[in-house]
Structures are given as C-alpha cells and as structure tokens.
Length: 103
Image (cartoon, rainbow, N blue to C red):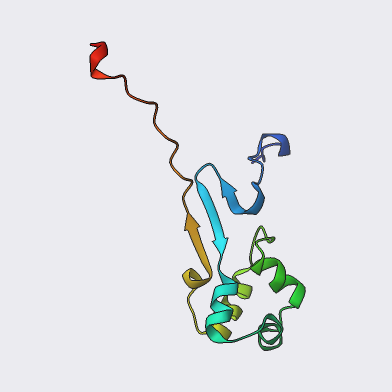
C-alpha cells in the first residue's frame, strides 16, 4: 500500500516561478511582438481564451498544459524554449576576505 505525504509536508509552491534556484520567465510577449501578432489573434488561432493566454504572458500561471504549449508553438512557429527561459538567482556576494595585513 502506498501513502502520500501530508499536504503540510509537501514543498510549498513558490510565487511567479521563483525559487532559491532561480526563476522561470515567460517571454510570450516578446515572441508576439516579433511575430507582429496580438494576444487576441493568438487566442483565435489556438482556441485558448484571452484570459488564459494573458495569465500565461503575465507570469500568473503556475503550470501549463503540454497541449497549450504545443498549440502556442504551432501558431507562433517557435520552440518551447523561445517562450520560457530560466534565470538563475543573482549570486550572493561572498563575505569580504580578511586583508593580508592581519596575518
């Protein structure tokens, strides 16, 4: 018999795709501009609502169906990596090293 871990013990989702490891950024807006296409036109051609595409574009979506990603890629003639990018968290500055004069 398998058990699932209690909800309280699961890792909590992190807002806007951000974590201590970095963040996932949706670049749909840039791709739309490059293609000269509006969100409304993308909606008409994919069959995905303006609301859902707008939430995706604005980083409000926490998850995306593969079928949604495939439809957007088909219409925009792009790859998934053109629509989402990983940005690492800026490295925290290392503590200042002691000066050689303290030796």
